[in-house]
Image 1: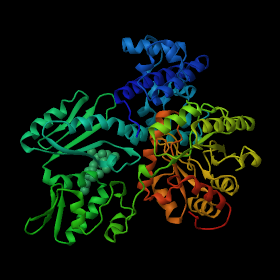
Image 2: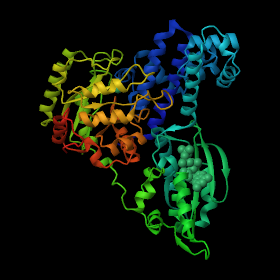
Image 3: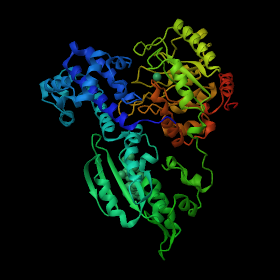
Image 4: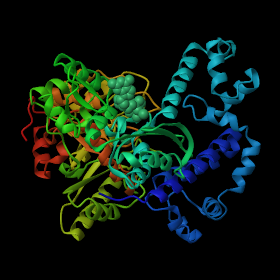
Length: 594
Ligand code: DGT
Ligand code: CA
Ligand code: CA
Ligand code: ZN
């Protein structure tokens, strides 16, 4: 898989955060600065998604200029930051805009005008004061603030809290990796694993847990070493066998637990959780006259140790199959493991294609040929990719007109010829309009190799009917990011999943697991429900830039948490099988001919 330069990613993200703050300042300053706000937000996004260290581009303004959303003025700010570690314009902005109000700007339901009004009329300057004012009923006394608007504010606040107390899986992985490597390489550490929700690949992560087996005589030194890592902001706790630190910048907590090599499996099992899974294991043990703790499994009466060095050994003792961490959520895994009925979970290496991505034709950062060459070199096991640019209704995202799609077909054919194989498939991410109709005519749709239809508007209502109507179109092969949620930013819209899954099966329409870190949509529990009914899924990155193709691994994690085998995932099959799947479309049948 593609390797990422972590120091570079961190630098890019620091700068992205500054540009985001600058955008918020300009947004606050009002209409005249509106375009600056948009420009800085776009630059922030580009930096956030940049694969290479920004320093690589920063040799001169011209190279920077080739980056999407970065012109001369912002380019200069980047150079300034890289040489001086600060940006003068930002320093000045900070003086003009009340900084404490900025955190309010990040709440999805609040615009600058509302914030100013709340500040002026009710002296509200931060989230706590806003929450207090809502609860005391003071907001409701203002003109224009009805029950519905206040409800929206509450929802925005709830999402904000979620987004700021828990990390997205992707961010947690990036933050954890360097710390984990540091732990692994400390003298005396025999082996180490990441545990907790991060090992279970939950969509959001509260803190990072690491378990290490180490030589006992060096434990003291290891703990001392750990709490004085250069990335440590603050030490929360430090004892003989464990320690907790807060990391600089991100304020993320990292818990380290030390054990002896013979206890490693038991400690790892305990720290991996979930808590509910652990509790059930303990209950089962009790019934057998055993006890389970961080040190091993013991006979309660004699204290004789029965297992503990590896997780395999422990599950084996319980006469269970090894339960992959992603399944340890009390969704039936204990029962299945006892009956030796656990599914063989899909793996990254099973994935043969990415079926949702955007090129420069719409809102992607790379042209089709660069995408194809990148995939061929970084994902050599992929057999095909589907370019799915936006359809006409997506103005902001540069949606293509019918004519432009025909031109894109020509380009794809040309590049395929050059590469000597039919690697690139012609696709589209079609807009499902408010009434469930589609925004391209059927004659055109028939010419695509793969059509994914998604909802990009009307998030505040039940969208079951719209989705069903899209499935019923014989030219639609897949539903994209089916719930429309953005983790910590936008709630999923209402869908009757039972009904949608039934229709998806009867019309032969696949459902996507969108692997964008903010989406992870379809959600894991719904994935399980879908495949139990027999729905065919796809996993796609929805990449808008080259570094986003690696999001596939997040999508695979969601599929694993949803109990998927490779047979549940359409893009683990060869293109020929996709063609048969398409032929099945609209034939009313419950089973797919694959
Ligand atoms: P998070 O950090 O909120 O995303 O979720 P986890 O699952 O990583 O939870 P965390 O960090 O509080 O604890 C790590 C693991 O330690 C957890 O998954 C199971 C275990 N654990 C923590 N507290 C308890 C407890 O009170 N009882 C049991 N049985 N296990 C616990
Ligand atoms: Ca944790
Ligand atoms: Ca923890
Ligand atoms: Zn989309």
